[in-house]
View (cartoon, rainbow, N blue to C red):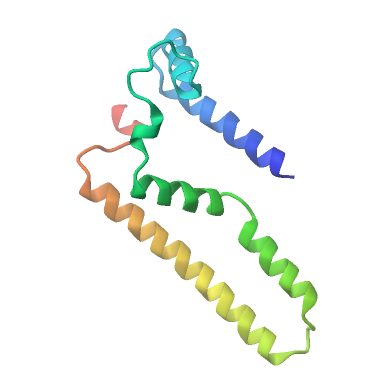
Length: 125
């Protein structure tokens, strides 16, 4: 099952490169740089890793997989349906997940509105 998530992510990532690129040769060169097969290694990717980038990668990795849902499902199978404390815990967990996603969205909005660079490619058209 995790292979299909990886495959989907790679297909979407490569598709975005071709959608954004002016020419096919530029897109292929961009994909070479992204994958590390470029001849020019003037700026290694490790230099762009800072605390903000690592946090974004970690949150993206957790949010792009069904990790939290699978964790709750496995916990659901181990608990009895008649247990009232489990119902309260389940409602609390669902509320925490929704709050986490709302906070993550608000953090993204704050970062986008505070930067001078806007990564949305649709402003070009």
